[in-house]
Image (cartoon, rainbow, N blue to C red; front, side, top):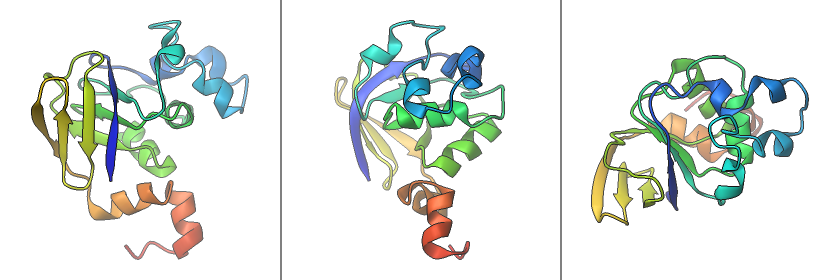
Length: 165
């Protein structure tokens, strides 16, 4: 599984309210509408700056805060290729896997805003095309990759009817 896109970099402790503001979480179930507001409190024009397959790059503790799934669903529906961070809040990580959002742990210090990246999820490396550098990633276990490849845990269970992974 190889992904290509542009990096949109954020810092440490990006909470779920930064990803999708609380003022939208309960007003709509329309995921396209939610996706149009991602990171709006940090950058009101952010959703206009992204393209399908782009990467969100964060520091430590990405996705801290609320346990609600709207943050990961909004990112997925914004067609973000993956979220790359030094570390993830535990509930955000599990919610991401559950909905089929690719989450990658790696040292993000050498990734800058707008760098072009190629992410090989299977072999566990990021190629920073802009800087001609290889960044190792903490590879996802095979069973999590299979859940992601099926589009999340619900799709996985519909297809396989159990968790024999």
